[in-house]
Amino acid sequence: MPYFQAHRIVVLTDQPLKSILQKLDISRRLVKWAIELGEFDIEFQPRPTVKAQALADFIVETTTPVLEEQPKESAELLVGVPKWILHVDGSSTDTGSGTGVVLTNPDGFEVKYSLGLKFLATNNIAEYEALLAGL
Image (cartoon, rainbow, N blue to C red; front, side):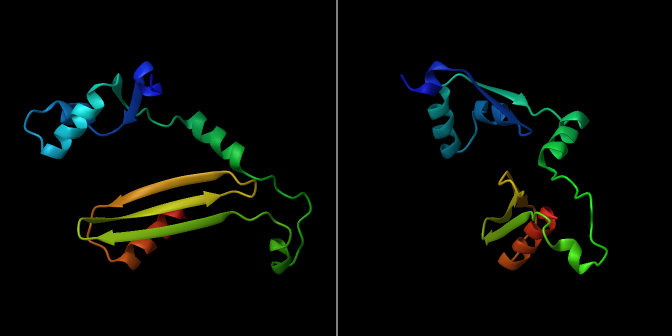
């Protein structure tokens, strides 16, 4: 027996997926997916808001310690300091555009984020938006 047929699936979302999948006047593609997903025990719940403590815990877990002795010259400040790496990409098609951001801390922990743009954008503009979202 497949895993998802034996266990309840909880989907946390801010989209009204349950009401969309239960409408009778939806497109053929959505009908197909509603039938496919109907065999699973799926429960849709509103996504909870991020609590201040969860955000504080995330910052503590992903922040690197500050060096006790810092050099006086500004150019020397960057030597030996662990670096965070930001990867961004954007995409634009006739049907819409979006961006993706992956932020990696010095320990290799990755934070991934995707963003759909609600305006027409060229591929370059989508990539610029990804960069801004990453900052």
